[in-house]
Image (cartoon, rainbow, N blue to C red; front, side, top):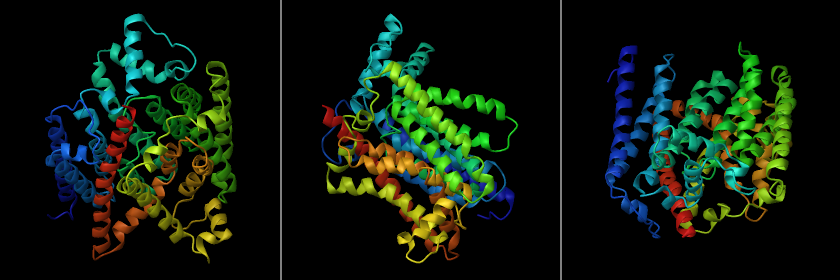
Length: 472
């Protein structure tokens, strides 16, 4: 098909988008007509023997379609990025919708959901009662209030607890794109690919499969960060945005304690990296992030001291019981390999982009390498993208420390850390996609992407199966 003229390109893009929609429809139809499962098999490949072939065909069709749409992202028409981002969100939903669709009840694939459903049921019958300290609805009530109001407005409880996470993934992806666009608008292709990489994630510890305080916290973490970045850029909405920042942070505190810690560390890390940056334009913006980080931690401390003082202990929330780290290391070799593949793929894209941009003797073993990284001097990557990534330095430290503390949550921190890495990984991806006229590198990149997608489907759903069977 000739795509040299704009009309031809638009037709080709729309046809490709239709293929993606058909692929998604195939997958959804294939699992929706399956008999609902009432128990989870313990066999390693039980789920994949349960899923029909049509589901996999639809999943692969969608991925092929999204990969084909990359060629249109250079065009100025806003239709192409809209279709690409929307398709990436559909892919993420496709990957994550298996358990909500095939299970008889949300409690089957997430035992903790029983607590949330019981609380909301009680509120519907007897009125709102936040309970006592230590109860989730008492310590972080926002997610329960959202569920209560939604069901009061007419959404069936079963539908809400099954499918509201898919709606939250969509909100997360949209805010994430807006955030990346504010950080480096000149790198728009990398920003689009960053959302595609996000949609392939095999990790479900923070952006969880079930509706919970953690998942609601992802929305207000990203929203708070976006508002801070938006404020420091030139805009006619500065006063309104400035007023929204503390409100969004407060809603985050009401949503989830650990997400609030992540935001405070991110904002303080950003202020630190901006002070080190050699760009005067970037350096002078550090104060807002510093003040916002201090405000976040202070308000969180004040709220925690009043609402759940016995829990408000650094050692408690770092050693929180029931850690998913055990779900990554206490399993088969195949499970462990599939866990590594997705984050390794993103980190390798990121590392290649950094190493290609900072060419010094001894590479990673050179102090000069880290000086340039912290100062934002990476010629092939935008100053703001590098500053944003290095702003995750305190989050990275928490991630490393997590592996030295029993029952910690380093895998949740890994998901937060990846948010700072996606734009640079996306830039490397698009450079590889456009690099080879013979299309060999593009073909290799395509095969790797399909492989990562398939292993992500396995790993994401397998970790849910292991958690659910362990709780029985």
